[in-house]
Each structure stands twice: as structure tokens, then as C-alpha cells.
Image 1: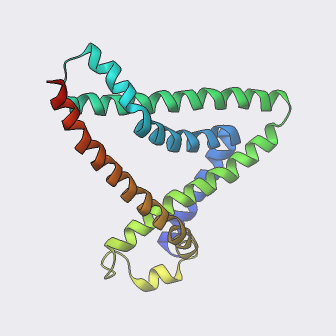
Image 2 (image 1 turned 90 degrees about the horizontal axis):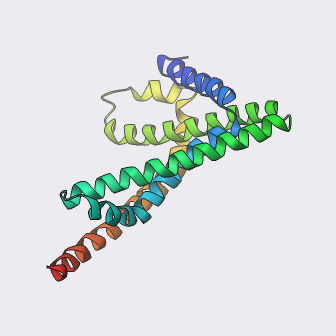
Length: 183
């Protein structure tokens, strides 16, 4: 067992502990709120931007960033409150043990997903084995199984990011023409 395995094992053990402590509903909600928060902030921050622009005379870029952050925070808080409510119902229905074990399982899956993305990025930087020897990575108990998750997930993320960039560029190209029409 290498030092890398000790770090990854400790991270997974800590994830299990936090998941059991938080419960399934809070763990799922934290993951969903992150994804949903980003998605809804991208989709609906323009509405928030328009509301903010009516009340302040900031730079349009600052207004857009503020609108994105506020929309994201509203979604995250809303999902968190819903999760706490569902956790209360689960405790009332005496599903506490199922909620806790499910939380541990889901938190480990979430951690593996996040670590796999970090590993995929690390692989791009460590292409000539400057940071970690190939032998160390090949002999690792946790590294290669987690790396396989990245091979599945990472192409989907890159595809989503490219689509987002294209849509964002199109949105920016349309925006100046509407602003010039206002003037």
C-alpha cells in the first residue's frame, strides 16, 4: 500500500463518516444543489440580472456575475431546506438507519466522482510522470479503479463544457447588438 493509497483511503473513510453523519437526503441534496445550482444559474441568471440592473448602476459584467452568484445561492439554499425537511420526515418515519447508511454510500460515490475528475486532470499534467511514477500509480489499490470512473465521466464533462462555451459565445455576440439598440 502506497502513500497515495493511504491518502485516497483516508478520503474515502472520511466521506463515509460524513455521509453517515449527514444522511442520504442531505447528501443527495448537496450534490443535486450543486448541479442544479450551476444549471439554473446559467439558465436564469439573466432574469436576476435584469432585476439587479433596475436597482444599481454597476458595470454589466459585475451585474452578471452577481446575478449568477445570487441565483446559485438561492437554488442551493432552497434544495438544502427541502433536504432538511425530508430528513425530518425520514426520522419521524423511523428510517433513520436507512437514511444514514444511504448517506454514507452516496457520499462515497460522490467523492469517487470528484476524485476521478481530479485524477483525469492530474493525468493531463503528469503525462511524462514528473509528479508521480508510473509504477506507483499502477500499483495503487484505489488509483486505477477511480481512474476508470474518470474515463467514463470526463468525456461527458468536456462535451458539456464545449457546448456551454459555444452557447455562451452566442449569447455574448447577441448581447451587444441589443445594448446598441437601446442606445
